[in-house]
Length: 238
Ligand code: HEM
Image (tube, rainbow, N blue to C red; front, side):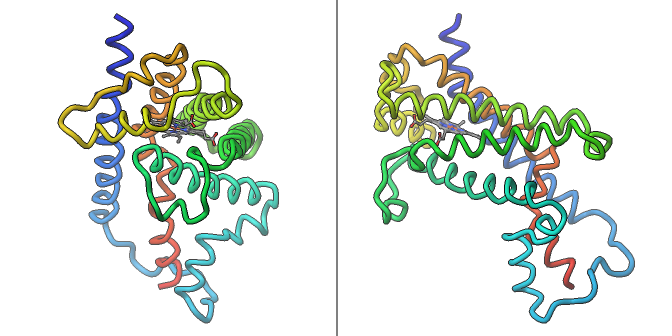
């Protein structure tokens, strides 16, 4: 029975998760584009001298958050920088990209720090919502999505650190991950033998399980703001 559950999490559920993620984001775009136009302007005054550059600066450096709360700003920047490296790391688990190896590194990149930074920032965002006034404006989904992220990060980071420091069974070769992940783009998706044979296969399954849940919830959570960030910054300057 467990074999079937593990297979479901590792293969069909991954398709369901990515389908829900992309379908959900598309749905959100349609909702926004079809919503009634607001009379007047959403622009913020005074307008800066170069609106487009200002929009990019505000999206990447978030000066509003810096002015209000330096610790919060620090964790936002750390989280987003680490998340970018996380995406690159996972792409390299699918196949080799010469572009990412311009600075040569072992896969998974970041020497374990990517996971540690993400765990610390997620805990900060979670506990921040326990305090007033954020507590009053938080809904259950805000806590659930942070908890799912935390769990996906904990198991991912555990796998990465354990394999890096040579814990037996965690030394699943990158090639086995590549065989598994690249098989999603073929007609025979499967979990490679190298992963199934590991005594810690359950940790991989737990990581993928919580990651799948996160991906499915993302379009329906407040985190979807990241997708609309640039558009919102440009509207503020129209
Ligand atoms: C469903 C697809 C996913 C698969 C198959 C997958 C697989 C993996 C694997 C195999 C590793 C460890 C690599 C190693 O041992 O060196 C890993 C690491 C990690 N994953 Fe995932 N992952 C997935 C999605 C996600 C998602 C959606 C998140 C979070 C949003 C995530 C967060 C992490 C983190 C934080 C690490 C550790 C990075 C580090 O310590 O530097 N993963 N993942």
